Structures are given as structure tokens and as C-alpha cells.
Image 1 (tube, rainbow, N blue to C red):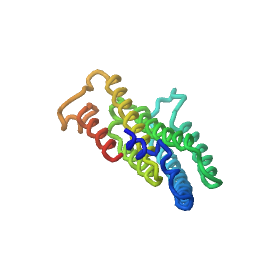
Image 2: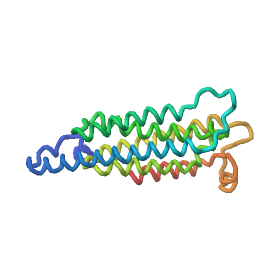
Image 3: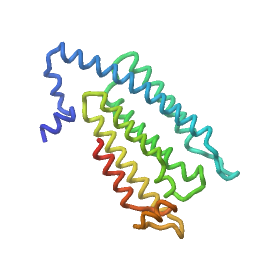
Image 4: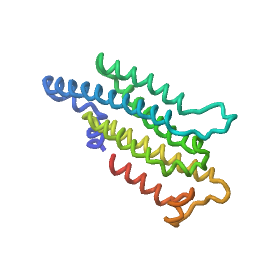
Length: 206
């Protein structure tokens, strides 16, 4: 257990390094955070452009769409993060918060797909936007503390599991949980094995 905590960077063992080495590590970490902030800014801008150009099928009486508000809040947060990483060192609690916000935004965007296209929730389980999870996990590997990679992976697994449970719980009549792969690929049915594969893949990549 102690070795695991050391590997995740939770014991402060790296502070036993010589000052020169620690200073070089800290400088590299700061540069990495600046790069991460720039990539996150690119991602949120990409989300914004894709959402803007994608056709909407909301009902006329629809008065609230969560995605623009979430993207706007994330854009502001990313600018704050970029400014902070440019000016100095970001505290650990802020980095953890950033990881959680990244995954929360992604899950919210994926969840919103069934509203945007007026489909049952199972519709969003086939969204290729899931692949952004691996970008967010990989970004944390630019730091030397494995705990941020672990937090990103854990948040992604929990988030996707919540989306799966929500989709199963809100399946409309006629749409079912199936074990038939062809039926799953050609309908809005849910294949739990496929969702389990995704979670295992996220875990393995992490």
C-alpha cells in the first residue's frame, strides 16, 4: 500500500529529491500545465463549433438547452486555468477540480445528444464523442504524478457508468436491453456487454 501511495504521488516522497532535480521537475510540470490548458481551450472551442453547426431537433417549446451553458462555463474556467498556468504554479486542489470538470463536461455533452436529436437515452451510448475521454486521460500523463491520471480514469468510469444506468432506467417501451449484437448496432437497444467493454478499456488505458 505504501508503494502504491508513493507511485500515485500521495506521500510527498518526491520532496526528498535534490533541490536542483526538484526544481527541474517543477519547471517541467508548469510547462506541461500550460500545454494542457491550451489543449483544453482547443477542445472547448471544438465542442462549441460542432454544437453550433450540428442540426437541432428540439421541440418548439424547448426553452433550455444545457450544452451552451456548460460550454460557456467551461470556456471561462479554461481561460482562468490558462491564465493561472501562465502566471505560476497551479495548486493540487485546482488540478483535481480541473480533471473532474473536464469529465463532467464531456459526460454532459454526451448525455445531451438524446435531447438534441430527440432519441431515447440509449442513443448517446453510441456517440463517438466517448473517445475524448482518452484525450483527457492522456493529458494528465504530461505530469509526473500518476494520481491525476488515476483521478481522470476513475471519473470517466464513474461518469460512463452513470450514463449507462440512466439509459437503462429510461428505456422507452419497445427499446430493450439485448444480447444480440446486430440488433444493438441497428437499433436503440442497449448491449451491456459493449458498455462493459468500454469501461474495461478506459480502466486499462488509465
